[in-house]
Length: 430
Image (tube, rainbow, N blue to C red; front, side, top):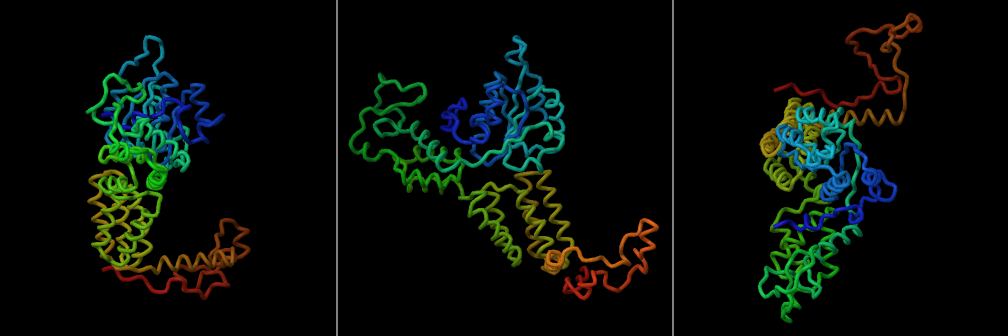
């Protein structure tokens, strides 16, 4: 029942593929692992690029006890239990415990504050994993005590190597997939690394139907996975269980039965968020809610969506309904403090409100018109009457002279004094 991704997980750096900038010769993470440096660190990168694997390799190198938690479901009690557990190696005087905290960005501030003293004291060696920028998601006190290693998506060449390894664990030397055991010869034992049953005498029909995976299917799989090795391996495993052979057609059938296609850095990501924003701009509430649901169902970070809503509230609604920014910020805070699945209700509330609000881009357009003049004309002299005059000399030079509150005379630099950036007055609140 063990997933294929777990079965073929590399146990050492020699087996690990990719991230050469971290684990190549004389690179920082390789040095830390080989020299057994004890240090907390955070692995920041997209899904399926080896964060969990590297954490396990590091813990194995230290000979430490390894504890794995997901910040989505874990809390203070889980940390308390790990700290209270006696080390397996206590009798040898070695008490290192590596805590691998997956999706550390899902831990709220209070949970991170609770974790901090155990990291400071060395009671826990924290290895965090996140797909989000830790500068925004990890509290400064904890972040300052951790090294941050940035992981990249696997290249096509690296993905090819990983996929071939996964296929090797599913396909026999004769070109047949493993079966449930019917018709197998019990006298033939698979190697320990394979741990699976062998079809010894496939029929000609089986041989033709269960042939080696062709390059075209592998190329499609690489393109689909977008550098996510775990997704590619899961696709291989699921397709092999559902169909007699792995082809582009069977891979596509497996993909569509599993989930919507949505790559957080790919074309579909940008197409969907674009459709979402444009639907709100056009006040098409039904369309906006549909695209919201599509993003949430496909695994998009709710805070990413909420950030776009905060921007939209000022860019597209602006002065027509100033409370829109208040609502959008409240939705963002709800996503931050509540999280999924409940915060999708807050998102839906906010989307409906923004869609039905009047639209006014005048403040947005006015600002960028002013910014264009800043870039074109540089630092034009500020009128003397509105300059700061903190010293006697500056007052004698005329700084601040003639200033009157609520003066109707333009405060713009002389060269721009007739400019009108905001084309209309703010609307009266309803």
